[in-house]
Amino acid sequence: MWTAYWTTAPGVGELRTERGRAPGEGEALVRTLRSGISRGTETLIHTGAVPAQVAGLMRAPFQAGDLPGPVKYGYLNVGVVEDGPADLVGRRVFVLHPHQDRYVVPAAALTPVPDDVPTDRAVLAGTVETAVNVLWDAAPRLGDRIAVVGTGMVGGMVAALLRTFPLGRLQMVDPDPARRGLAHALGVDLVHPDDAAGDCDVVVHCSATEAGLARGLELLGDEGELVEVSWYGTHGPRVPLGGPFHARRLTIRASQVGAVAAARRARRSTADRLALAVRTLADPVFDAFLTGRSDFADLPATMPRLAAGEGSPLCHLIDYPESAESQ
Image (cartoon, rainbow, N blue to C red; front, side, top):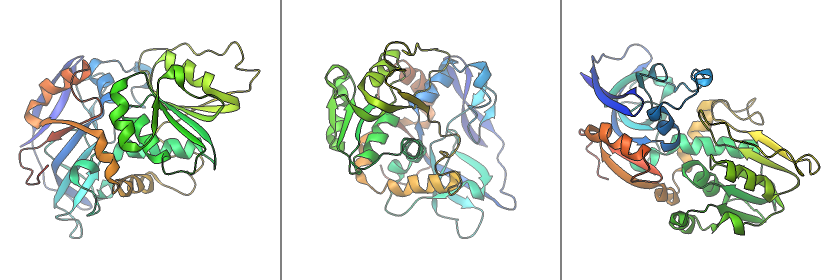
């Protein structure tokens, strides 16, 4: 029997068993080593805050059940192939799969984890993939002045990637002083929204707050672009389109990982994008995003605590009982 975590009602989750099976042609059996909780999206799932009109668009690749629930949801999973194609057996792989101890998926859904990427860090691949897509949408240019407003998992990873670009200025903008440790690890300036520098070419907004969105627009220079990465669930934020918005010819662009950014869609597949994200995790700076962990057996109690704002502010790792790997 296999065991998986299900959200059964708003604010409630449980571990459920299901009958396992052997992989068929073109499939692989994976034993999970580690999974990760994507706090932004999974909190919305846990609290039942996904609007009905976009529930279908929010489906995870291997989701079972339908939103608002009962539903098996998640997409940060690293495991080892126990059965399947000979060239994959024994290899660590990243899979966009919910929290589950074993599962069978098409072999094409597996992204091999390079030897120089530790298992814990590899869990971050799904969020790094989002950040890659954001940069393909934002298209930063040489010497650009960029602000990342909201520095949780996605915003922090956007900053982590941007720190390697030849920019004129890069600031992480967040009112939470607890983000100083992350900013220090990345080598990027952290500033309070009131102190952020203006005249930006690009602002990447990730705070999921009205105040953050409004401040992001204020930080743009004339004809600048705000890339909106936040997803607000059932909340409809007010967008300040009055005042100088039109006179300054500002732009708001949506960025969402469900499709490859238009600028790369003709030449990159989603598999290419995810493989790039996994390779990027060879950089040890991403360890700064691993800020909590607990056991799979405790997940029904862990998820409500995280949804309430307790514990790990970034990526919370889930350890599985049969994992032979050290932390």
